Amino acid sequence: MTIAESIAQEVWTFAAQSEPLTDAVRREVEDLWPYRPRTIAILRRYGRTSIELGRLPSILGREFFRSRVTSKAMRGFEDVIVFVTDMERALKEIDSLSQRLLAMYVLEEYTLLEISGRIGCSERTAERLIHESIDCFSRVLLTKRLITGLPHAEWVS
Image (cartoon, rainbow, N blue to C red; front, side, top):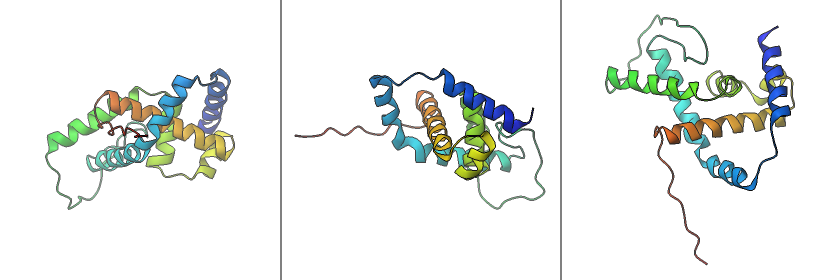
């Protein structure tokens, strides 16, 4: 079985097992959408930082070593190691389908059309699954306090 076939099988299994959203879950998911740009930015930073350390991000596979050095100044080597380790631990807390979707969409920069073709579903379904994966990872980042919560606005009537 190819990787694309195994991902497609996971997608269809996930879709078959999913239950209709309750109002409480729907409100929680709707509350996470503002974190999507921050989560994507942190994942991109994680990808760049991992590569600067000479390894691929854990959700992409094995290690490799770079042949050139960047001129970017880092705060401290320890800070970089802690950041990469924290992100790897956080990524382990989400399911493998979400990890693969985040890797394809954020780190490898596949388009929605390419992702939908690889997992065997419509573009809209791929987009929904990607947003759910980002929201799931945002929730993990919030609980681990790797990102801070946004202030809640009170509506005055």
